Image (cartoon, rainbow, N blue to C red):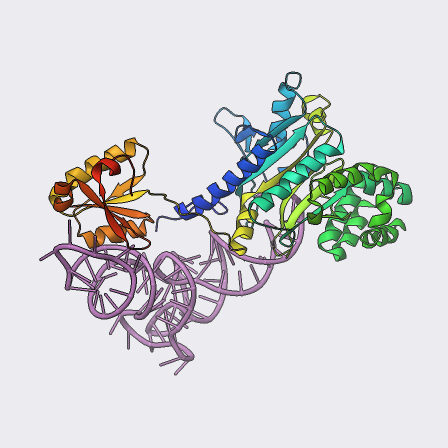
Length: 423
RNA sequence: GUGGCUGUAGCUCAAUCGGUUAGAGCGCUGGACUGUGGCUCCAGAGGUUGCGGGUUCAAUUCCCGUCAGCCACCCCA
């Protein structure tokens, strides 16, 4: 045993890479259907990209170090700052709205457990330059459609959506929560969503001790589910209602439920926020996102509203496994060539070369083996058929094409076989 | 970063109260099977019992440390 991969990092064996590739393929396909273009940036970034701007939370768990040139650098923990920089640099030139997606590998130094490693791949989809709720609806629809593309329905996954503008307006209006107190109170609400008992402790940290508002705010939080309808009639609810109407038009409403307890951890969200999660709720959120209208302004000094989401491959992969979603075999041979005797090896190698030139995927045994062994290998490789070539066949200018599923076989003229025609 | 649980072939698991050459199934390799895979049978390879230390005549077993995994915190890509 020569050790293993670093904790939280994965070796991808062929079966596992097949799953990863299947996920990537589906991501790209849905992104394409929504008219998104793929981009990428460097995995290693200046440390300041993360320390200066958004959430302080992220910084504590950065993979950060000094390079040989004395620069402070970090492996990217999220894609959004890179996106903000890239868009900011060409903001004038890019036609709005910008629809971009990326599948970056992201890194965080934290204790690993199931569904959260130190490295993962995350689909990022963002619409930049459109402030209206139609963009939010488009992004949310894409997230849901990815789930559908994996064969997951409304019984399997749920999309919970909220709007920070509604919740903060209530908190400010009813309880005089100040701008300074708001992030802490929202953190309390975020906490409430997962573990109501701890929300109290958070509020006591951000608000003055014995503040009478604490009890009232906790009351407010616990009533959010029942009070949802009322909040949706408030003035600030118009974008959210419009977004949901759009989703309804797209026939996706059955996936969606309004839940004002959704906050999302990141500080930079400014409007609609949402999470896609396992209906059985045994795993964490599959995907989360929302509107962040001020971030590009902060990073690049250009006012550009954005909405987007991230979806990681780890939780999604576990979810697919739980739902028994099969992934196609790692190799996709078209045929396995079998040489009956030693004098058949050269013709087999020549045939293999011809077929490969035509784009046909073939393999053959690399050392002399009985036919039995060669067929065994062919089956193990998942080849759909074996082409058997022996002295008799060469004399008759045919090959035996054996279907490895059914065991049926027939003779096919070599002139056809050479062209990749096996029947 | 904090706490709890767990660590035996590639995988799933055995091994009496601490007892001497640590086993089985699956998988892998070879053979029975010299022009036809899946079945069956036989054989083989593969272990510093995560690692290090301690107690003991004797440790997979008990103790300590460490590393790793899982779980809960922290935090949430």
